[in-house]
Every structure is written in C-alpha cells, then in structure tokens.
Length: 65
Image 1: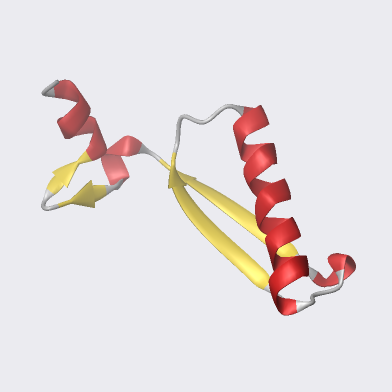
Image 2: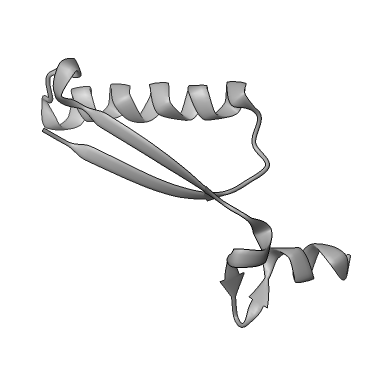
C-alpha cells in the first residue's frame, strides 16, 4: 500500500499536476507491483516564500532575476 507524498513548489497547472499523479501512479504499479486501488498520491504545493535552498527562498531567487 504505497503512499507517495510529493512536495513541489507551487505554480504548476492542474494539467501538469494531473500528469504527475498519473505518471507516479503508473510507476508504482510497474515497479513495486502495487494494486492500483492501494496507491495513494499526495501532492503538497509549497508557496515560493516557504521553500529555501542555500538560505534563499524561491521568491527571493525569482525577484533577483
């Protein structure tokens, strides 16, 4: 019973998120032989102000471009 929890920076379209869910779901079926009804995919969209790498948020990085 895989629970796949994905954190991603906000800004993707609903179509992109749906494609991500579909792709991850299919890979779980194929690689770990999970039954489709037992696969849960969670996507957490994180605001750019709440995601930082090297002490710089995505928002700050985007503002400096």
